[in-house]
Each structure stands twice: as C-alpha cells, then as structure tokens.
Length: 315
Image (tube, rainbow, N blue to C red):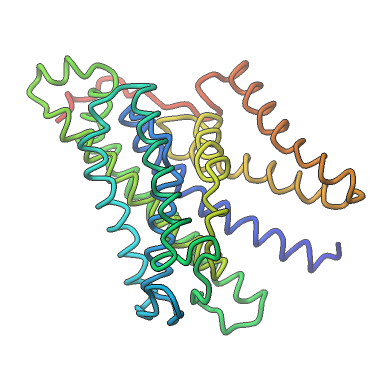
C-alpha cells in the first residue's frame, strides 16, 4: 500500500474511532456513571442510523423515506428517536438489576434488529437503505474524508465537554452516589428511578447520534452493520479497557480497540485468501487478549475514574 493509500486508511480509521468514541461516551454515562448494564447498544445505534437515513435520504420505491431533510435536522431526529425509544424501555427495564437488566436490553436490541430485517416497507429489509447524503460529499475523496473527520471530531469534543460538565455538576455527584449506594441516596430524598432513567435516555441519545454519523459516513445502512459483536460487545470492551467512569478513558479505549481491530484486519487481508479467512479470527483473539491483560494488570482500566475527595454532598 502506497503512502496515499495509508493516509486515506488512517483518516478512515480516525472517523470510525470518533463514531465509536461517541458510543463509548454514551455507555460511560449509563454504566460508568450510573451502573446501568445496557447490553443493547446496537438497538439504539440502529434507531439513530435508520431514523436519519429515512428522513434525509432520497425517495425509494417500496419503502418509507425520501423526505430529504437537512442533515442537522436528521441528526437531531436520530437523537430524539433513540431517546424516545429509550424512555419506555428504561421505565420497564430499569426495574431490573445487573444481569437481568443486561438480558432485558439484549432482548430489546434483538427485537429492533428483527424489525429492521423484516419490515421492508420502513427499513428496506435485508437490502437496507441506500442513497443517504453525506456532508462534503461533492468534494474529492481525500478532502471529503478530512472534512467529515473534522465534523466528527467537533461533535465528539462537544459531547465530551457536555458530559464532562455534567459529571462535575451536582447531577454527576448525585448519580455517583446512586451508583455506589442507591439505598443511601434514596434515604437522602433522591428520586433514584427518575435519575437512572435520565442517564439511560441521555446515553441512548448519544448512541443515536453515533448511528446517524455512521450511516452518513457510509452513505447506506444494512442489518449487518448492527451486528451485536461490533455495535455492542466491542463498545463494552472499549469502556472496560479505557476505564469506566472516566470520559477520557472511554475515548482512549475506543481508539485503542478500534486500532487493534482495524490494523489486524489490514494485516490479515494481505495473506493468501485461504489463510486470510481463518486468520480473521485472530482479530477476536487479539481483542480478548488485550482485555485480559488490562484486567490482570489494570483492573480499573488504563485511565480509572478519579474519586473526588472532600466533595460536597450530591444534589
């Protein structure tokens, strides 16, 4: 691969790191800050992706769509749709705890995935949605990639600053108190159920935005893009490796895991075909090995949550 090809590939990876960084930030709000075990990330990612694709895409025979909304309106609608889906799910599922909540959210994500695959009039079925507009799509390839990267970086920075501000605000301290000891927080008069629901909806909205950025980057979306391995469990590994409860750790984990995932694919693709197919399983092994090493030597993650000392009571 020549230098130009490597540069193009590096920009491509950087854009995906930004998108997955948003997913990791959303999960950090739910798990790192609130202790909510959401194993259905792929569902909210898919809702955001398909909502923006349907609202901003070109007309297509046989399915709803072609509204050609402005991109910013489509992205806002993607966040709103993910949040609206999260609200009733949270009202029901947040009554569960730990592994029961994980099972419930996995079930919800599978329901969303099956609806996407079967309801062709809405989502295009297995063919998906194509003809999705892309910002700066009229530029040449490399300038278009760089412009989209700048847009993704700006949104990730904005999301990071917003979440970081919330973490340092009384709301963030209250959420930590609920996560660490919900009975003590309830005894102090905090509405635990309502606050957990807020965190669940907030994190899901960021996941919806990540889905919208992904679909406009690829210009299309199919059910294969919301594989739970890629859109759920890989996000969990990113957060665990980086450090739950620390936004910088979430972004660091997203960068490291996606680099391992992408570079290993690049290397295996250069092998002979009969070997490359089997070698792709090495990617999963490398991700697992990386996680095991971090859990062994840095169980709290590479950038663990910093506990404040002498902080005022939450609320």
